[in-house]
Image (cartoon, rainbow, N blue to C red):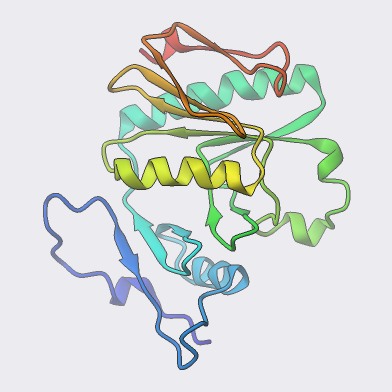
Length: 211
């Protein structure tokens, strides 16, 4: 498959309400879809864009976040990373790290944490690419460019992929949506702290630094 350069494909105008751009690839075999390895090559040749691969094989191109969202994201990473360094049992990653779910979807959560013992069987080469593993814990931070319906769908996909705990942080409504396997999502209104529970024992995110 020859990978196109996206700069030549993106239209110069999109509707004002558009949140992202979806690229769909048709193949002679209608059951065929872009693979995670092909998506890796796609991203390698289009380094200027932020993109994710859906389980349907479509590429979602997203605009960069604004300054405020970037600031909040760094704060979440700082707190999670500091706890993880002291705890020592897992690795924290930011929104540059992509994960391949069992469905084939390849997403890069705003923050994630994975037990070290789950990483031992991956070679150095495998760890240098999108990792074929679902993190134990993920955080998605809502930004103005996010499609709310798509974001909620993604949270469920994290659980289906194997996440043990997932948070959707909505700084505009000051809500935390907590996702746990086998349970309905819990919404916390205007919390000041949120616990990592038994997945991240001892970790609490201080939300007064975000809202």
